[in-house]
Image 1 (tube, helix red, strand yellow):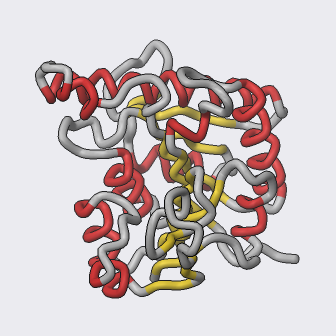
Image 2 (spheres, rainbow, N blue to C red):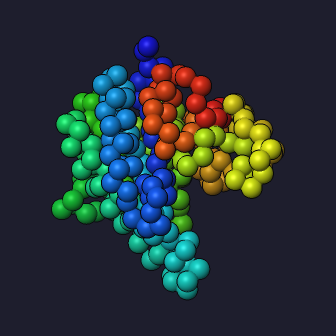
Image 3 (cartoon, rainbow, N blue to C red):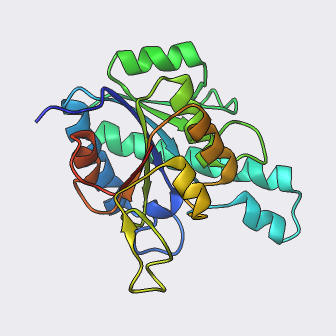
Length: 236
C-alpha cells in the first residue's frame, strides 16, 4: 500500500510517554514510537512532531499551586524539550536522521526554530521534532501543533493520545459512549466535544486542516493512519 499523505504533523502528548509510570518517560514506550516512526519514514513520508510535556510539568498545574503563570508555562516548555531529546535519542538509535528545533533558544542542545530551515529538514527526509511549543506562555502544545502544521504545509495533523478517537462522552466513565468515525469541525463545536483547546481547534477549522485523533499506544496506528486505514476519528 502507498501512503495517502506525503507530509504529516504528529502531535504526541507528554502523558502518552508515561507508559505505566506516574512520572517521567517509559523507555519501552518511546522505543516503540521510534520503531513505528522508522516504518513511516521508510514509506517516504515527511514527519514533523510537536511533543507535549505533561509527563514532567504542566504550566496550568504550576499556576494552581500559586506560581506565576508565564513562568510556569516556560517550565512546561522546557519539559517538552526533555521529551524531544529523549525521542531524538530513540529515533537515532533506530538508525535514521532526526533534528530537534526549539521555539526557545537553547543552542547547545537544539536548533532554533526557523521555518525555512525546518522545511529543508523535512525535504531532506529528516524526522523533525519541534520543542517548546510556540515559545510563548498561555498557548498550549495543541496550538503549537496546529500552527506548525500550517507553517510547514502538512496535509494533516495526527493528534496521538491515550484514547482511540473522539467519543460523545467519556468512555472511561460511560461504557455506552459512542465513538465517531468522522466529524466536521462544526459538528464537534455544536456537540461540545473536547478534541483540543478552543484556540487550536478554531485555527485548524479556519484553515481547513484535517485532524485525526487516535491511540498512540496501539502499535501500528501511525503507519495505518498514514496508509489511510480506518484508525481513530477524522475531523475535517
